[in-house]
Length: 121
Image 1 (tube, one colour):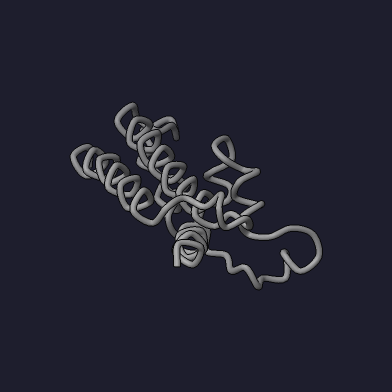
Image 2 (cartoon, one colour; image 1 turned 90 degrees about the vertical axis):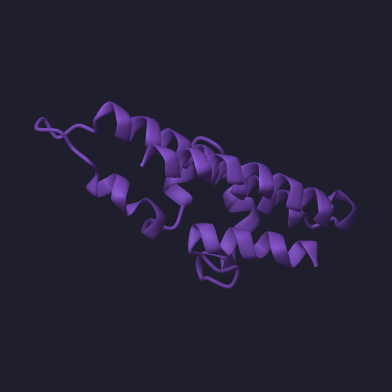
């Protein structure tokens, strides 16, 4: 059950499926995410989740204002936290997987990130 939960998180937050053609030859969804965290989280995140950053709240010089920068730092931190849970739950070796109870505790911790983001908006 925890494996499926992990894969679900990875699918939801990357917008990719384990059956996508990209994974037929070389890797898999879990390894893509694991190898990309934390530095490349925006590159692997579902574009729908990060499109506002691209469109952005720009000032007159086409730069993100300070509040927007802080907001996006929190969003990136939240994405990393959630995807790390997905990776931990979807380990190929069952005994290495995060326990479902621990996964729920971790997700509740991620809720704090989202509350901070909501407050910043």
